[in-house]
Structures are given as structure tokens and as C-alpha cells.
Length: 486
Image (tube, rainbow, N blue to C red; front, side, top):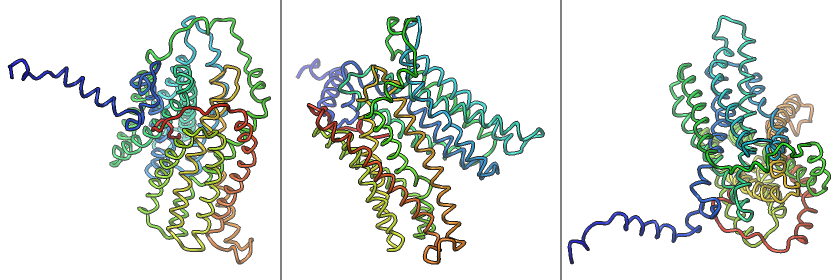
């Protein structure tokens, strides 16, 4: 063997390794099934970074800062709840944002990029002023506390507006640049990145704020603001092709007419109603499962914390089921209905866990909640992209996102209020001696969720029948992580 043949050639080795890696195919590379020639995997993953920034902001608002304000800064829980709920005020405007990005007028030829940039600035500005406003809000100041309250409310509102703007425009951009047959998988992949961003951010914030101080709080939150700016800039860089013909000044921008056209369709109204009811049915328990396990079933802190892992495992199971069902050509409305039906059995298991004193039945119920919610999310997400919106993709996705976000926020708040009110009545004996138990308040909420999911089945049923008749050929789907729901 000659010296030339024995010479190490890294370029050839790298080529062979890449060839073997690509030969694995989408079956073992679950992200690859969302990629296409028009939207390569590297570009798609870079675009998905805006979802990472959104997940980081939401974890900071609803998780990390929630605890910091109540425990470390001594802010009243009622005031904290009001601050956390402020971003919800902007959720109903997502449909308008989507439509405005559909019809944006610009000599540069961009429709989505300006809204991504504006949303990024809103996120950055809110996070930049947030730590100082929270410190003033806690009373650590010589000035009036009302200044801290106003500043904190402004910070939360800015971040909420930025999150909804970035997410709506980003999803619409992903729909624009992806080929039609890959769009459901691409948008679903973006929601996977949202979950990953939330998980990584939660772990990072927990580690950075373990030794809490006001200086550390300022550093962490403003670091998140800077990281948001970087991630969103990288995500939108050279993603949207310029097309001045689509953004010329004579484009119609009548939102009310476009909304009336969408809302006039019985199918669209029924779909959005089913989305809201189902989302509320699955999310009303968000703040009650862990207290229920601890107070009623006497589970320890570690055991109740593990419920999050059970929910995630149920969602992964829904991912596998949904991928196979869509590959067989199941209608997405029917898939969502299957998820709602599974949720009915899940909450029934949760209810019966208390009288049977069965922690196993409780854990099975939690697992089924994750699975049912995942199926429902995949089904509604896929169906939303098929709405006849007259070419206004942003309007359709914005309407779907607005309904989901609003229903989830209101359901979570209403669930907590219902539990407190019913538990108080039961403790006072107003409901009779048979219901004078701490479990009554929780059980009432779970029964309400069962009723909501049954109503969802009634509303979505005609859509499944209609789509089954109208659908001529199944949508080609492949098993992959891109089908995982948000």
C-alpha cells in the first residue's frame, strides 16, 4: 500500500460520514421530515429561534418572576396575579396582527419582518425595565409605590404584546416560506421549539437565581432581554424574500371585511368555538393538579413535581399516535375529537382517584390529560391551516392563536376561582354534610372540564363528518418530531 493510499483524507471521511448520516432518513432524524428543498433544515431551525425567545419570556413571566415577586420581594399574591394576567389583554388582537402582516404596505417588499422586529423591540423593552420596576414594586424605594405598580404593569404589558406579535408574525412567515404539503409539520415543529425553549429557560433561570439578590435579578432579566434580541434577529435574518408587488400601497386593508368573511363561514365559527371550548377544558386544571395531589392524596413535593413529567410523557404518546393517524389520512377534526374524548376519561380518573384513594389512578389520569391535550392540539393546529381565509394566512393563524391563548388564560383563572368558592361553601356546610370535604372544590372543577370536553365533542362532530366527505385524498404525513404539538 502506497503512502498516498495511507494518507488520511478528512474531507473524504467527512463526506462519507454525512452520507451515512443522511441515509438514516426522517425515521431516525425526526426534525428532517419538516425540511424541504425550499426550506432546508438549517434555515428552518434558525427560523424556529423566535419560538425559543417566546418560551423564555413566558417562563419568566408566569413561572420565575411569579415566585420571586411573592416569596423574595414580598408582593401580594393578588397583585402578582393581576400582573401575570396583563399579557392576556393582548391575546384577542392576534387576529388583527396577523391580518395587518398579511396586508402590510412597504416599498421594501416585506410583510412579516416589520412585525417580527416591532414585537422583538416590545419584548426587549419590557424585559429591560422589568427588574427595576419589580424592585420598586416591592417597596424598596423612597418614592410612592404606585410608580412601581405602573412600571411593572407597563413591563408585563410590553412583554405580552411583544410575545403575541412575534409569535403571530413568525408562524405566518413560516407558513409563507414552507411548501404547502410541509406546512403543518413546519408550524408544529415551531411549537416543539417553544416547549424546548421553555424547558431550557426554566432550568437556566432556576440555576441562576438559586442565590437570590436584587443585583442577580437585574442581571438575569436583562440578560434575557439581550438574548431575546439576539435570537429574534438571527431567526428573521434573510428569511422573508422581498416582494414589492405584494406590499404595494394599493393593497386592500379592510380588516373588518376580511374578518366578516372568515366569521361568516359556519365551519370557521364552529371550529374556533370548538378550539376555545377544548382548550378551556384541558387547561382549567393547570394550577390545581399538584395541590390536589398534595392536599387530597397526600403526595409529597417530589411526587407532585413529577406530574409535569407525566404530562410530558402523555404528550409524547400523543405525538406518536397523531403521527400514525395522520399518516393513515385521518381528518384533523376527528383527531381533535379523539383527544377531547380521551380527556373525558382522564378527568373521570382524576375524580375517582380521591374516593378510591388511588395514587395510581391519579397518575394514569394525569398521563391521559397530556395525551388527550396533545391530540387535540395537533388536530386543531392542522385544521387551522385549512381554514378558508381568502389567502390571509396570518388572519387564520392569528384567530386560532387568539382563541387558544384567551381560552387558556381565562380557564386557568376561572378554575382557581371556582375551586376557592366551592371549597369555601363546602367548608361552611352550605352544600350539605355529604360535600363538606376539601375534595369538593377540586371535583367541581374537574366535572366542569368534563362538561366542556363533552360540549367540544358536540361542536366539532359535524366538522369531522363534513371533512370526511369533502377530503379526497389523505394528507401525506411522516412520523417525526415535527408533528409534536405546542
